[in-house]
Amino acid sequence: MSRSSFFYRNSLSIVLIALMLCSLLGQFFTGWSVENKELAENGQKALTLTQYIYSGHFIQATFENWESEFLQMMLYVLLTISLRQKGSSESKSMEGKEDVDREPIVHPKAPWPVKKGGIWLKIYKHSLSLAFGILFLASFILHFYGSLKDFNNEQIMNDKPPVSTSQYLTESRFWFESFQNWQSEFLAVASLVILSIWFREKGSPESKPVDMPYDETP
Image 1: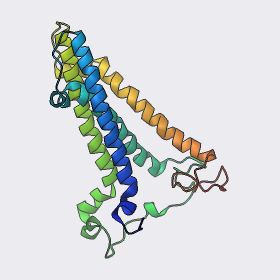
Image 2 (image 1 turned 90 degrees about the horizontal axis):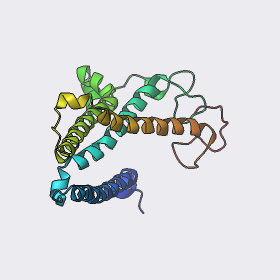
Image 3 (image 1 turned 180 degrees about the vertical axis):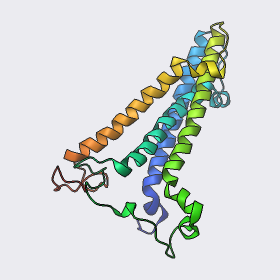
Image 4 (image 1 turned 30 degrees about the horizontal axis):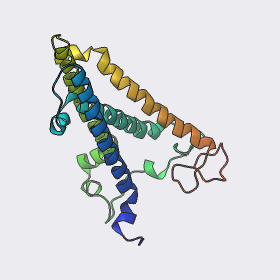
C-alpha cells in the first residue's frame, strides 16, 4: 500500500469507525430482538426496525455508553495536564515543561485560531476538552431521554402511571445506568496508565520503548 494513499494516511480512524459501526449494527439487531421478545411476553405488538430506532430501549442503550466514553476522554485530557504517574507512558515527565505546555507561535501553517488570536485562540487552547464536554453533555441528555422513554413504556405495560422528567431525575435506575458505565471507563484508563509502567507493546505509541526502565517516564 502506498504511504501517500488516503487509507494509509487515515487507516487508524477508518478501522476504528468501521469497528464501531459494525458493533452498533450488532447492538441494533440484537437489541431489536430482545425488545420484541419482551413486548411479546407482555402481549404487546412487535416493533418494526424503523420504530426501534426511535425507541427508548435503543436510544438509552446507545447513548448510555457514548456518554461514559466522552466523560472518560474529557477527564483524561484534563487530568493529564497537571497529574503525573511515574513510569507510565500515559503521563508527562516528572519535571520541567513539555512541548504541549508552550504558548502557541504564529506561523504560516498554524491553525486559523492561532493566527486570529484573541478569544478564538483562548477557546482553541481548550477546544479538545470542550469538544468532549459537549459530546458528553449531548449524550447524557439523550441517554436520559431514552431511559425515561423506556421506563415509562414499562410503566404503561404494567398499568402504572408514567413519571415526569423531574421525577425520573431522582430515579435510581437512571443513575445506576450511568454509574455502572462510568466506573468501567475509569477502571480502563487507570489500567492503561498503570500497566504501561511494566508492560510493553512494540510499535505502539501507547507503550514505552521495550528497553526503557520501569521507573522512567517518557
